[in-house]
Amino acid sequence: MNREIPPCGAYIIDSRTGAVGQVIGHTRDFAFVRLRQPGGGQEWSCPAASAQTTTLRAYLRAQVSEINNRRRLV
Image 1 (spheres, helix red, strand yellow):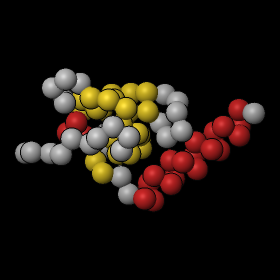
Image 2 (image 1 turned 120 degrees about the vertical axis):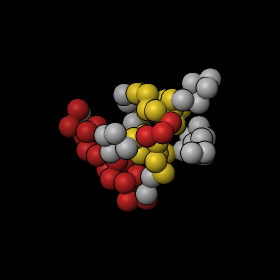
Image 3 (image 1 turned 180 degrees about the vertical axis):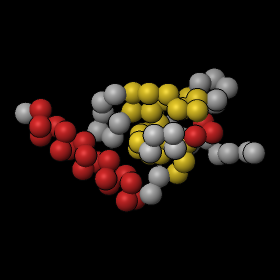
Image 4 (image 1 turned 90 degrees about the vertical axis):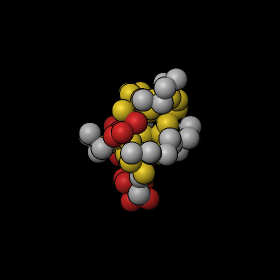
């Protein structure tokens, strides 16, 4: 199956966990995508086969969650 590689800066869903992340890099062979939580934070690797295009709803939910987390830390 020929999947499109998400470009750096794109937001995708890690289908293994349902988490939304911003693409910050790839491995040389494009087998893995490096992701970061919206607004910064924890980074993780996602197999390219598990990367799905995000919906606006999922992206906005992740943004609101990140804002709420920051408020709790203040």
